[in-house]
Amino acid sequence: MLPKLGNHEFAVGSCGRFPVSQRWQRLFRSRILHSLGAQTALYYYGLIGLLCLLFLDAIREMRKYSNEDYDLNVNPKAEMQAHMKLFRAQRNFYISGFALLLSLIIRRISTLLSQQGTLQAQNEAALKQATSASDTARRLMKEQESKKNTGETSMHSKDEVQTLQTEINTLKEDMASLKRDRDAIKSQAESVSKEYDRLLEEHEKLQRKIQTGGGDKKSD
Image (cartoon, rainbow, N blue to C red):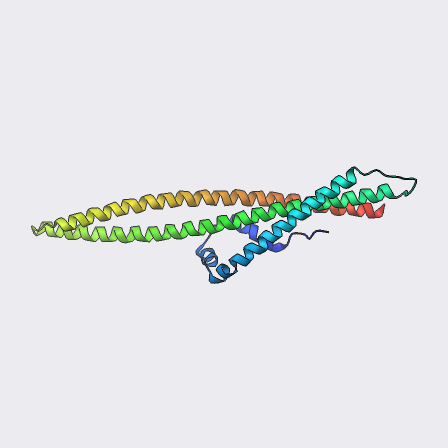
């Protein structure tokens, strides 16, 4: 029998519903995760390979017992045994298929969370740069106004103010672009999370159906 999905998979998938905070960003950039990154990827692809093998084996078993001929004269219980094996093959097919699909969805959600955290950090850094440049520009403009009142002008100050104003406009455009990217990734994460919830509900219904069918088989 294939193993059921664990609670940790549900918890990881549920994270897609919430916005990424600085805590998530620190977690994604931690040394522990970076040191375990290669091993985790290896285990993940190994799990995907194992699920693919189980999925293909279930398909093979379904085709085998669906087209099998029964000789009731030799073994009267042959048909019932074949139906039981077909039922188990179908059960393994659905469970391995859902597990494979949910593993890919969880991988996609974790990638979106990481991208959203990176964009949020970039957005905060750009906001700090824009604030600093704006404060510097205001200070220089005040100095220039003061020099105008005393009859002194400085071309250097004018050029510096113009350069800072250009930098501020560039940072504002970068912030708007980062915000659009962040919103797009957040929307993708929410849609993937909703799809995960829907598939999880179908998986639970299928498990209950399989358990009910298995109980009926045993009672027969």
